[in-house]
Image 1 (tube, rainbow, N blue to C red):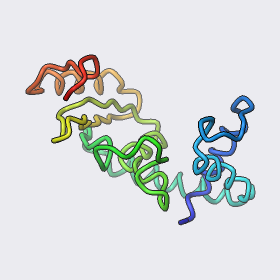
Image 2 (cartoon, rainbow, N blue to C red):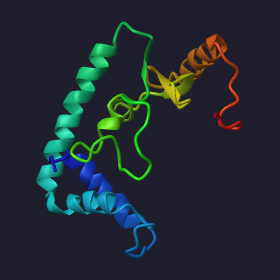
Image 3 (cartoon, rainbow, N blue to C red):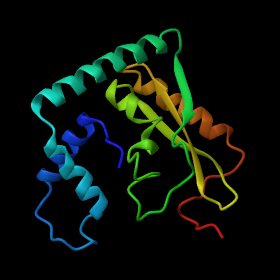
Length: 162
């Protein structure tokens, strides 16, 4: 298994530890997710400090790249879907499916996602709108404009598709 970022694993073990007690059955929590979370215990405070420094550098670079743009419209996920019983797209890179979303969580920028299409299996394809920090209203207005431009009426998930 490829080593994941220290900050993600340290956060994961903290969140895992805050969950109510759970048994060892597979239905309680995915065993792979449990093992990944518990792997955070291997990291030291110094590891976390270095990882947070890297996040700060990434944040500065991302915010600098965002200058001059009001909004970024990008895919929500790099794939349409992955099996529900899996922790993500790849066990080797468990957070690969957060490629377009996690960075904006780290920079505290508002983002919204909207279904803009369906693939050949009738699975939804999302588009994410991201704006400058504190521009939640602008992000929601762009999202609404995208919804209004859709070529279909949104009845999903209320009416299952064949």
